[in-house]
Length: 412
Image 1 (cartoon, rainbow, N blue to C red):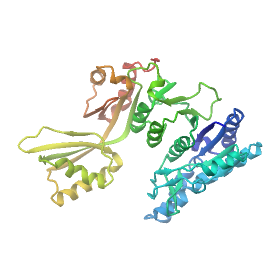
Image 2: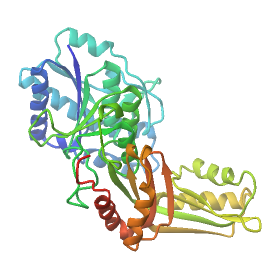
Image 3: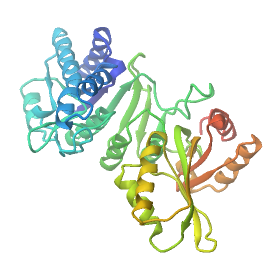
Image 4: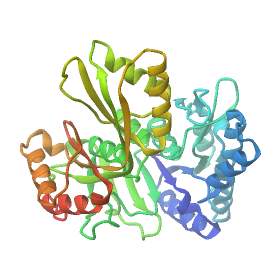
């Protein structure tokens, strides 16, 4: 039998009625002749509740116990989904991560999947099981401890199972009906994409689009897993959702596929840093060790042996970055005059594989922002992406203006 992986997010299994609705979706695919592996998240809000209980009980908690507790939400959903399918006369059983087993590293709360042996589930399919309901987000370390993959980890679980079992497709059911050219809450002209390349989706996910977890897209691209993002609240159809696939499957597309934004950014500038070989390593080494996720980096032209170094990072990591820099200064590793943090900025990006073969995208983007009176603070580019840092108060204006300028409301 061909295999299909179906993943249901927290909102899609938020209560018993929604679990029943999701089970009907699974039943349709069983009727279509598939052996189905269903990956489930915890019920909406449950993981946050469990995390809150952990923090209240033990602020400096043992990460191993944290994983044991927060992974329990998925166990409940998996069991309930299996029971619902059994009530529909569909042979199904639930699987926790350790039963598969989903083998992971021992980095608790942020483990990475190392291997998914197919033997146990395949044996049950051979015995007549039609649906394996697997608890997402969790696995087991070599030491036999329960691990979790980090927030949004059920997406990664789903793609990893699709790769391991050679699934025909991996369907990600969520509360949105696909991937849009930008956030529909910002502009009503946002258009749902029928198809998007892995690379474009990876950039959009990493730049703030919250449809898919970045790690899941990386995994899908590496193993060529065809992903479909669709809503669990709409009637099923062959044309539903957005297909995330190889660039070769997309005949023609707009130069720009989408506009992404990240609201919670901060710009940090080290003023008057001694300009010498190794200074970048001396700055960004301590930031990395402190767990600061540095994104954009700009170094000014050196003058009299001194320079300014600007970088961006998530707003909630500013204090960590400041401490890392002050500690490095105190140790004599770096020397700077001042450290200035601007937490009133955001990042806006345009993404598209068409940029590889079309010129003028950057010029057009900068011209559009200039016409709206929006000052650009930092610029960074890749082969298929241009990102700018601007004042946060202009974020929605910038997104709307760029969406209009690149005519993203029109199909390519």
